[in-house]
Image 1 (cartoon, rainbow over the protein chains, first blue to last red):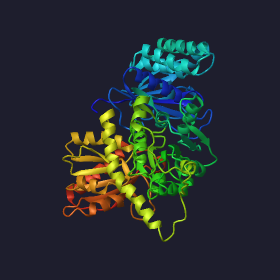
Image 2 (image 1 turned 180 degrees about the horizontal axis):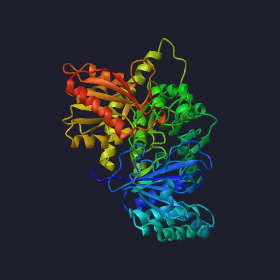
Image 3 (image 1 turned 90 degrees about the horizontal axis):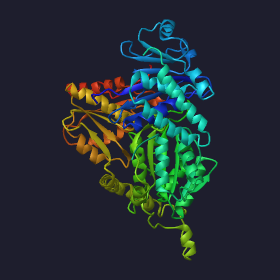
Image 4 (image 1 turned 180 degrees about the vertical axis):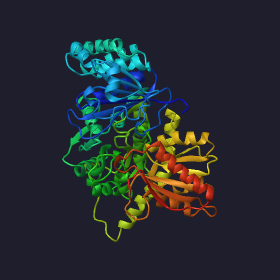
Length: 193
Length: 395
């Protein structure tokens, strides 16, 4: 109880994999022995509509089942959401971290939204297109999240994600490989660290 | 084994491990995944179950009744409007003493239409003769469904059981839980005990009738026997919860007492809000505030004497009611608690009611803290200023 639970909020648009990112990230943290929660915000399910999903990660069992209002980290999968919705809502400018999928640098994003806290950027969409062949930025953003927060080890993330994707894409090893190199690249290419 | 599962996945896995003879179900948000995942287990040949895809929840319960009346183990899952559509068959399942096991994802009832959590659906079914087990988290949902089999089929009980989860909050939340081994679950639930069996009775040349017309001459005796099953469940539920604890390390009974020992004020809560409340109470305890939590797991049968025993001597109690009973008095759990406390001879605790979280309205730590402070204030002054408050609503 005395140790704070680590909380993440993911912003995306329906179809971009915000829910999957939370599930995969939760599973990866579980594989390191941590206690986890991963849950989406359920509203009308429409392709392209703004959606959110959440993670709680802790060394102790998690009992809290209220919504996450003050996350430690916010991950934005789609930069067009910035300015449309308040992605920094509940984020503490002194301690909170904001990670955005964009070719722009952290300073430009800060200026754009008038946010004084720490901002990191990574061009996850370009990475996804070059590695997976499609603009599905969720797995590379996990790589960026792990780099910025160090909440779990990147090798654990790679290993567990590989296992999960191998199950889902049994006959398409190129998708698994693409996602793995996307995570690695985003881990290395985050700006602002 | 430590794994991560959503509430719906955990229910489906428990069903796979229980390996029932018949599952009949119809989809409804947010319970659909339970039988959807289970149907994949059937298709993959992981269970022996006959899966009956029916055209409505009324038919789902009817098919379970038919299956159970033939002596086999039958299960289903539903939520909200689906449970409402089963209504008349719920009473028939209980009246025929059929140990059907059902996972229910708590979702509010229309109108206005809403797919999110409150407890109005199962609480509405409280008088149907079904045993009701509420779950704090995904682990408890899984554990409750496994124990439900033994409770329902116990020869002294023979009543259907529903195990519930809070819609979306648990049904769609992936969280860490301990999954038991298939063989351990199978050994725990065992084979269904011999019961009056329609098919066998015909084969044996001694046909029986179930659900025959039962007028002024015998209806009352049969209803009295059903009630006896519910009285007996009060003995059986803690026994099975204890056996489960001895085998798997997690002991269950009617309710859980959390930091109650020297508490002067107590908050009573069911379902997923309990965990959040535990975090709040831990903080308040560090501040020296004497508040505890009573988590009600078994709502039917209602453990009135057991509650009175542990609540006796407390100064003030607040009930968190996640349903609007439309009684123009309080929520539906309050009167049950009130009745349980009434016979305490001296120093009866003051009792308050808080209706919260309807239609999935988020229950924040601030909301829970406010309720706890109100109960503490009442304990302190020894005087209550109101009976009911709505918390978290704009008005």
